[in-house]
Amino acid sequence: MDKVNVIQHMNEIRNILSYATNIGFFFGAGTSCAFGLPNIMTLTSECRERLNETEKKLLDKVAKSVIDLSGKSQVSIEDMLNYIRQICELTQGRKDYNFGGITGEEAANLDRKICEAVFTVIREKEEQADIAELRKFVAWYDSANRHFLKEIYTTNYDMLIEMALEANYTPYFDGFSGSYEPFFFPESIESFPNEDDSTSKWIRLWKIHGSLNWMKKKQTPTSAERIVRIGKIDNPKDELMIYPSKDKYNLSRKEPFIAYFDRLKQYLQKGELVFICTGYSFLDQHINDILFNAMRQNKRLYVMVLCYTDEQVDMMSGYATTYMNLCVMGPKKVITNGMEKSWMYDDSVDADVGYGLYWDKTKEEFLLGDFKKLIEFLIENSGRKSMIEEIVNAK
Image 1: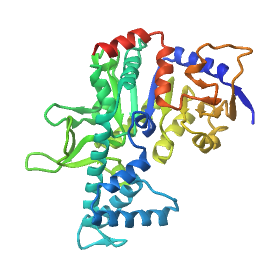
Image 2 (image 1 turned 180 degrees about the vertical axis):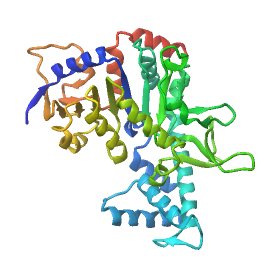
Image 3 (image 1 turned 135 degrees about the horizontal axis):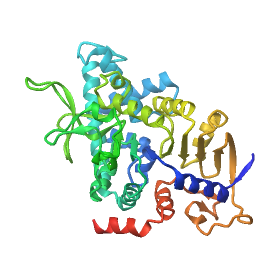
């Protein structure tokens, strides 16, 4: 396998980031794991433990069905939610109809109980999380002087980013409007504000898999069924809107999930853009299709994928020759310029006193797949470290 000198490569990355006219981010579960939240399989087992014995038996039946149908060796809580919601859709949630030995009523109740368990597990972990480094990232991104819309897309439904933004008093927008029970306003995310708009400098936060503080309010005599955003809550009273399984993709375009995906498509094709994906495993084909279609159509789009393990690099090696505007970086391997290569460290030509920010010389591994290491690298190379630390320490 060919080799690439990590020093020379990172000099190129620094130049790309320094001169980029637009930088956006896509956060997967790995970014929250960096702050102590569970990965999807740990979340799956912890949620199961929150169920009663009857619910556990139902969940195990669902898991077996999903394994039999998919051929997977293990399934996550999201895989099971997808299957459960398909049962609800087929049976219309009725007690007298069943699919695979599970009634519609049982599926609907299990869906609700799982979401409540997800809420409880994540909320407990959030309260223990130290978000100091995440606050530094927010300060770095918000303080960038370049005139571009700062957009973060995330599949995470925890609220760590909101906690960091609000701790820094950083204004942001997520597509909801109002104060009593903020409602989703799709027209607000269908256009891009110009520089004269005071909100153009706000960070955009698009939670494409929902959020722990999104609830579905049932129809009443004075209001249609709708999704609302609540503030900090300790006990959800309405159906949680997290993880948009297949049936939620089929909702009206006015629902957040579809509107967010439309926004992502527009954003990725809007001229020059460096789009950094971190903590994302590329297991959601719906998202992958949007990213790869954009790379084909927008040659001014440059996608950087930072991987925590090399298994992800191996999984994406098939895309290497197809997408020249894709760079995938793992601990030992890298995909760049259409080829998969291995890292090497050679300071005989170019020396870099700051190599420790991105390279572990002892393990001979690239470090930026760790979200905290990425934050440190971005801040150290920004020239604004003192200002960023002042922002975080002053608030």
